[in-house]
Length: 226
Image (cartoon, rainbow, N blue to C red):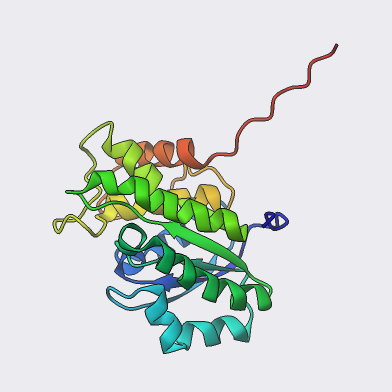
């Protein structure tokens, strides 16, 4: 399916997910980055601990909110291990939501998450699952997991995983927010001065640069004269 036409950066966004979105208030971190850059970012969150997208679909609340309209984009975050264990099921779940999102005139956005600390090799499957369904639907994929893998492969600090080896630390959520800033808001997070409790300026700068290296648009080649 061809990609949807490129629209303006969304101002009103619904997040559907679980604690990977709710922990450290990821939508609020994105809003803080947006505000520091002079952008408006309103958000709403539907989440339940450990929930898959199918859980949310069966509950009906998220779908009713989408059908009511008013959102520019809907961010879908699948249960963290489902893309590895059953990518086909994940794709079915995304397609269900994509139908009502399209009908409401909004854009589907996929929040690619990260591998657990003890299973870094799982990132290949997670990335593949999100990329495949994103390509099929013409949806925007926010490659947070790719940014995590890039930083984890280069250094140990700042620590991205929480103590459970699964959920994000403040640094991990901030890195995710920076990737959203670059991908969804189409603004470089580099140099953004929004303060974050528990993160110093040096760590913020590193996380900003890591995120932008993953999500910045490719440079157009200059035309050469014959």
